[in-house]
Length: 449
Image (cartoon, rainbow, N blue to C red; front, side):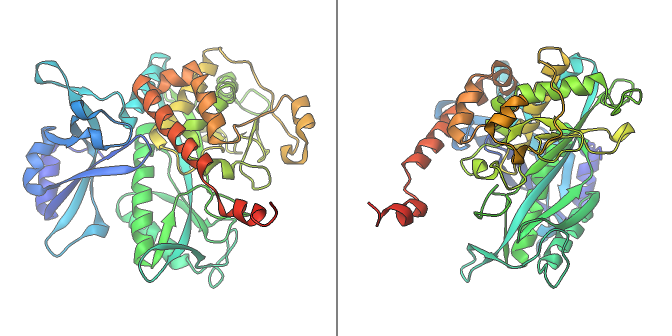
């Protein structure tokens, strides 16, 4: 929905808005906010709300800390789940700016939302109108203990598409859907996923920035409504060993300037255009390079292992679910690629920016074309996959950091500031992890050696 400043002033008065959250996203994908009373609405509308950027992961150093929040007026939203006795709460999603010369504000190069917008500008120069995305974030629900802390105890014993009483989280999932609908989401489906305690709620696709905004809002709603039910919702990719982890499949397509789906061509055998095939080749060529962005934490690599449906092999198919990219059956305006390797820990803005630039690199003719795979890749050994020309995604965070460093296109897509901060943060994370002695090691070795 499009809002003017006068629209927002009117809604704040009509809805008795007393408190406003100025939200933005840090490099790690965490939603942050600066809270202001509604009496400062005019400051917000004039882009004069400031915060200390040196305290935010991946932002700036302490001697250049002052930053400004520029609210995207179209993201104004009354947070229905935060109603209080004193009045209601609203939010803006903001772009982050820093002070420039002569008192003006300039976009902060490390703002993830800004990184995505910069890559969309590159897309526009190539003659495309929009990058449409539909993301499918999965999540687990666990019980809270008496102190309100999360446990690893499931509250259901359901499986794929199960109903109550086996799926005891049905009421919680329904309330999440109803809350999302109340704030404007168009919900397409909600269901129990494959693993015990795992759920998925699909909502309508949108253009890239709006789709990422929706993912961040979705996570906030899911966590808040789950807690009302005495549950903890987690978007950790692999919280429990031995069962499927949580992904965030990214369905995407390009819209031409004359409003046509660039991926559809009814004259070909599979109705995929040459542009679609080039797009796929670009994503596969840069899959290792952007894995640090789409699978950003140590735990991500516990999910993309053989045997649990998550793709770990760099390949594509128009039907094969063991491949990294799948082409759903719908054609015409709904023709799209589904990138299945992305997980729910990813910063959506950075992940979508990386996928976009990778695909565009293929469209520009810089990547070798790749044939589809119809064999079950999980059933083949390494030699069999090599014979098909199929490589693997990085096996851990350290490999992902190395691949990221060696992909100039992805580094350019992220920008120098984000690259420097991400490599620094993820190297620290990996070193902390490899120094840690796990319970698995203790149980396996303490008596044996």
